[in-house]
Length: 379
Ligand SMILES: *Cc1c(COP(=O)(O)O)cnc(C)c1O
Image 1 (tube, rainbow, N blue to C red):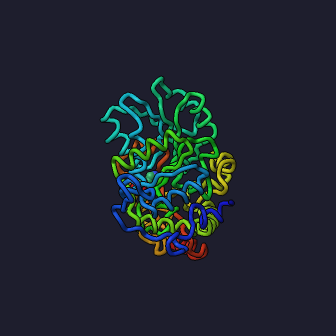
Image 2 (image 1 turned 90 degrees about the horizontal axis):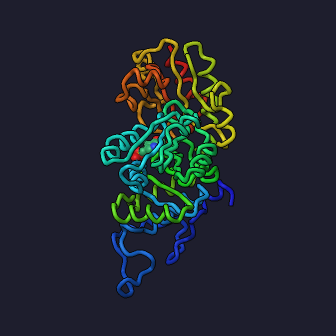
């Protein structure tokens, strides 16, 4: 089955008792047993729920994985992956990382004895230098946030496999429509389904997909034992969102390309960061591992100050000022004062995150309206 067909049909069969074409919302906490421990595959809803199973099969299908486990949020999915490790285990992660992931690593798992190195993963040699005898996991995120750097998944996962290190790719920014990390050699792929998979900014969720039986067993143990599971209604909303993933992504990416070229030519713009631009440092890697270049754009102003960025953002009316991404509506945000405010200014500057950097999540509106909205905000 090809990708677009999978978004509608993977793991989805008409429901057995009624023939309902859409997966029902199984709003139940427990299931009748025929005899002690004889059941129809479900015994208690923390462990499993048919609406959740439908979503898990669908995401596994999209990511070319054997299995998938769904969680209450992207952060809960990250938490479950990290709990496979033990004190003194060492994890190498990207230094341009989703803020919530960084907080979970440094404020929850580091105090519990797991060691982390944060490196520039666009450089294989930096990853090699960080490796120790205890390195157990490579945590890859690509495109990165908010600088939209592209990490070479194949190169890094080859390195990981050679050294018997597990690898995971946080695929939230690309979505499986654009990038399927398991086919590039990664052991696990993780999502905040809150973003492109859900697609309508109306539900929080997370998922990890893998074809590694042993890894999935550990994840299922976490699901059952720690219980950070999504409710059936949330699974239903995510299932419904995924049905239009392809058409939404196609429109968002087309819009993003037009906006990126508009920004690139604008006299008040210093730098436009979009993996689809030839000027992007890892444009060739993006071309190699992604089917298209995504719908996230970052840009900085020639007049580089937080005040100028704030002024700009107060002038847009279609682009809504908000954190998050991946919905049908276009959003605008200011990383230096919003998502990345806790990072000291010198550290931000060194990483290339300028005071005036503005991040766009491009939605599915008409490109002309979006460009007009940005054009008038420049004044
Ligand atoms: C949003 C996000 C997360 C966290 O997901 P939640 O669903 O908000 O818990 C993790 N990684 C990336 C890249 C994200 O954008």
